[in-house]
Length: 320
Ligand code: HEM
Image (cartoon, rainbow, N blue to C red; front, side, top):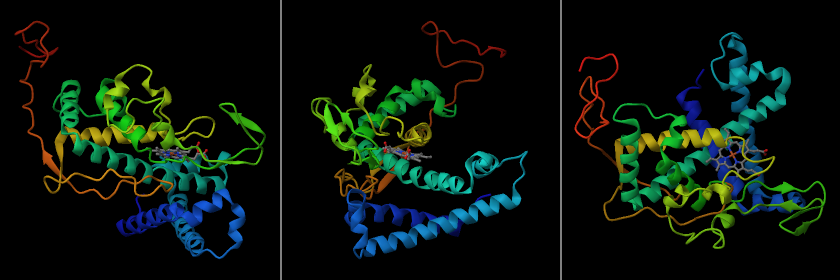
């Protein structure tokens, strides 16, 4: 049920432009001062055109799936959502897919790009993650999301990247529906609240040397308490588990097979924050992927781990 390659390319360009437009100051200002909508705004005009293009793509996907749906054999997430549509309704189905396409693509891509940029600057961390992957998975076992707890340094590296460069640095704007307070500060009803996750992650009262890339800080118990890249509360990101799973498997597979080096030796990727749009994108990154030598597979009939020094243990059911 995949769209054609041309459609995917077109849609990717559409999403990229949409996220760029959302980042424009003239669009962001509308979140805080909605009245500005009455003024002429070319970026807003363009945004509405791109949103129409996005919606046409989503409508086409839904129609194509509806026409060939076999209820006993759902093929993908669109089929599953169509089957659940009784509860959802067509408008919600449409927007659920929009959320999936937009919330779930640029954000995770930004996380992975930033992680690569930091790791190129820290080859020693790459080597340690590679060693961790070898120790835990050996040369051939697949890397799965459920391996996360067995790969503490890889997980810590993703957390440290999420801390230093949260892909959605200002979360999403919220409006208070009644008077409330945060940390003792009163907030009247109908106030637009924009949580600054980036600032929270760089707060010197919470983080030791917050500008430094130090994955080890997340190896300590309780270190996750102040990390909020997916925000918190009732409207926190619903895609956290998916994003974490995708990032762990993609980065882990990359580091298992390759060493990441700058495309031009001696130059290092930029880590500066270029714009503070809806998604905090990494400046363009050009890398060399240098294949790591493959460790020889274990001799048949023997494990790699020896219970006593020098003693090789046969695998169950195999001859020594
Ligand atoms: C590294 C990846 C991601 C990060 C850092 C991230 C972060 C965030 C943040 C900070 C918010 C705003 C929460 C708030 O305003 O309180 C959010 C909202 C949201 N995210 Fe994510 N996200 C990521 C990936 C995903 C994925 C993979 C999906 C879906 C498949 C997704 C779907 C959504 C949706 C639908 C919302 C709006 C929720 C609402 O308004 O109630 N996100 N995300």
